[in-house]
Image (tube, rainbow, N blue to C red):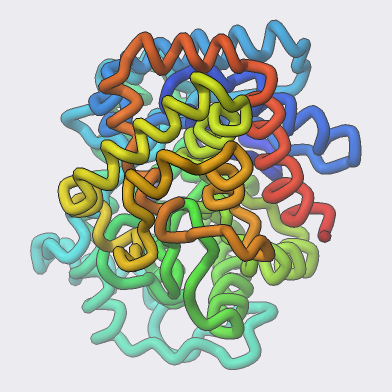
Length: 421
Ligand SMILES: [Zn+2]
């Protein structure tokens, strides 16, 4: 497959910013990492859903990124990611974005035509039988029936990705953007053999994919640590890296192809296993984060005290009054213990320190409350409702918020991922 594409750097960091005020503070984290030799290419991401909730246009993210880059004097590449877009939502993203995350999860499990599936199986005899992949101890044993099953489950989704890719490439030119395919927002994780078959199909479809976001084993809850079997995760992550290296050669996919880890913020316990694996394979990775920055805004406001703390308390009071409504859309990506949620009355008498300790993601702090943190993570619509009052508070307390935003991304994410603790 020879297709032009905009090459993506080895390590890249996706940063969502719901309210559009933290671009500089986020970029500052990349500057600090680069000073220590960890080069993360910044990617600002925002999905159709987030734009809709907050009431912003995709072009605002482009302005934010350009402004941040200019203000900080960033000389390396950077990108603007149309996150989780589909054919029906992509159009207003095409001009301002140069990174497209094609979300085809909805088509997973919908069968492609039987002749298309059979043609795929016939085209890929190398996928059937004993498939030996360097650095995977036990070769995959894949039957023709298994290839057929996986093709049935994923071919339609891959074809859908092809339609979106060609639509964007037809307008923008393939050489002007990065393509990611995301399959994370679905029920069951994709196994490494499934990933191999999916990559073969993506190559057939002619998509110059540079990042793929599978659903990994375990729970990737919003804004809190990974929940799952660490040994199993590490093995799966290593095998995925081996599969990607193999597929690049076998199918002529872009050499920069790498994994993308969605809901990648705050997953402290898997960063060290990931770091080991990335070193072992000399592989890159894309980490996608979003809501962790909005939580740092709240922490900064609470830390500022006075009217900042007041706003943070009001947002909590509103959220606790709408727990079920706010949590319902995120049921599969949060685990809130309602008995651990303090009442609005309790929080209303908290000091700055109490609020910050409950919310800041420091698992060693006895006061840290993962349920409260997850609730506030999914409650950003409250701040959107506050409108200018919230945005003015962000401006007024910019310095203390920026310190938290930068520190969170650099100390808790970039440093452990590339440099180790
Ligand atoms: Zn995702």
